[in-house]
View 1 (cartoon, rainbow, N blue to C red):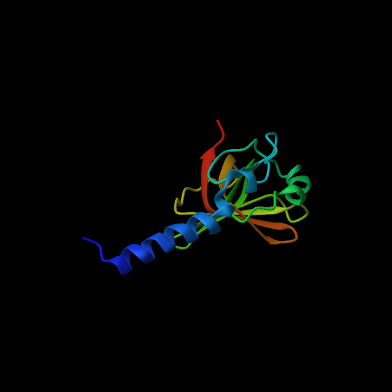
View 2: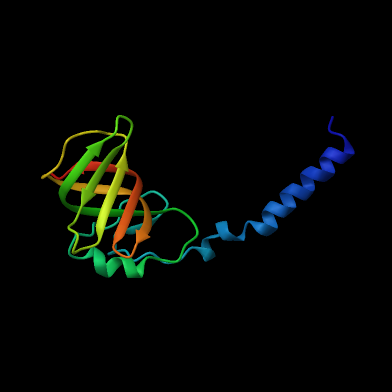
Length: 137
């Protein structure tokens, strides 16, 4: 049987989680454009392209949770360091996307769909980590 002290701390913890758990409530989740490449958590949005991503990155919802992004285009470069693969999409004159994945497939020059955890790492750089690459069929 639980001691009075343990039960008291358990009630305090549950109460604190209930009171401070507000960021997890649905009303605190911003609206994600159904036509956009961003989704809350894990999911596939309407893929951006190298030509449209520059417009989309200024409209990423302000959200303190995981945001996923989807983009379709030709891979410009890829490297494998023995543990991770780094796939680069879009030219220097565009917003570049770096996909960090565990799958070392050589897809340079092919059209692929990249999807993963969104992080803006520079004015014209986006990193998807973790990320998955799917051949575009």
